[in-house]
View 1: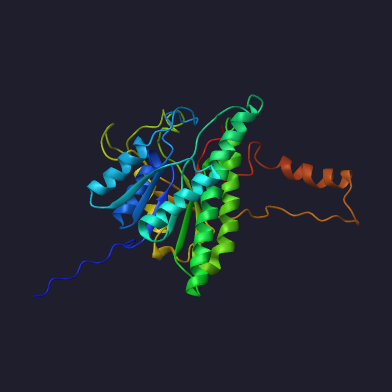
View 2: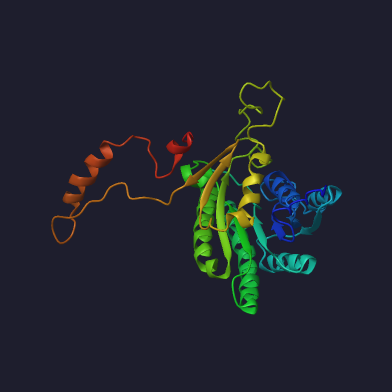
Length: 324
């Protein structure tokens, strides 16, 4: 009796870049994409400080790439700062040189410089915006140019997937992270714009808001137990493990997600929530040709008086988050 033929892996023959993949979320995502069959470029700048300080090291990226190869996968390491335009170009070129093309871009690299807005320095602001927002733009720019050129050569759509990393800090606000929240909000805007611009080339772009216990979030989640449900401490998978996030990245990178574009998804601990675009909660029209202060006072003041006192613009209540 003939043995059934093994099914091809979902990402077999595909190639991927994962930025910030030397540790934490990026590492888990790189491992998952490789497990699904993709050849991976493991990018990391390798700085020891989560604030983006310290001497760069190739070791973190090389260790993850070696781990993928040891498991039978394909991987190369790239030491580079994605916020540097030339280094982002070199990263995309490395993927093309290594695998013949680029199919998947997962933007994950980031740093933290937490301060209250009245204490934040200009450098704290610029550094976080640079790595997160500019870093996402740089790699997206060169990947998009690659896909557009391939599409023109092919005379039709090609295969392209972008998965960007936003944060619940953007959705619900984070009092001590005005730079981080602003960068993550900007990433959502970049993602939706990119999704519209590249759809005709066969490329999708989506963003995730992951909640995970990593080097960047160890202080935030220090009090959250590292076990699920009725499990004893130390047993089972940490509810905030990056491994809860990586399967969604693998799905969004796959052909199965061809109809998923311009979306924002929250993911953690066995949960995926699809966020809606902002919706109008109330609408007021002037009774005259133009609003006056008095008319707005008569309409808006009573409206806000009956709303919950701490309600924000974000989705904190829906996601069960606490205001900070």
